[in-house]
Length: 299
Image (cartoon, rainbow, N blue to C red; front, top):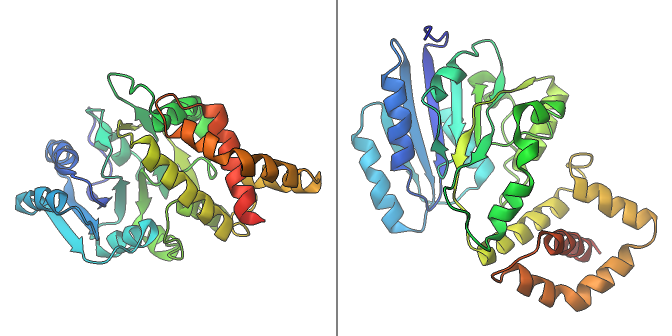
């Protein structure tokens, strides 16, 4: 294997109520095996309320080149990433979500082979060994899996970007930080993609995924979905052209049928939600629920 061209790397992991010692250990092992690499691993805890998870992560402070930064206040997904960027030392920043896992022996080396690119996104892959029966998040992610190949992502590079696994130049991150108005769950990465496009920052899509096998309960996923839809409504003007749901909502309004959809949602929402939080959820019902929920809050 040839020597990577990038010789300094800051690995940045935002976390909230999640133990990430295994992820940090995986990354540290790969970094130590790369000759001449100066690196640091910074984990920033965004005001976790689970003291057991915080206690477990404290061991990270004992490992070479690693720091565990505990923030008492939850500032949100955008602000915690900006904080990590400001706290970093090196010019190349690798962001990874704390519930992801390293699935390639050459994960770091692949990123380090992109010294001249401002932003590189590696994607993610579903890695659970057994299908979690009746889990809505799993069903949803599997329905999107074809669009997660790097070739498909590259067809719409800015719309298909997520903050779960990417490397960015520090100067880019500091010049174009994530929008800290986003306090609730969802869409901060979508708006950042739009911002980077306007700034002429190129996003390179590569085949270097992290593993995703953390699927919350159906009830929790529905709570996050509803929170994300509220975020979408709050930032609908900023996100115009970058959300299929916004486009569909706009067309229904133009065709004067949005009221009918709201009416159907109004009398059926409890039944729809009961299906989605139950043991046999339907993706078709999930799509209908999302549309009805958004139209209801936008009315």
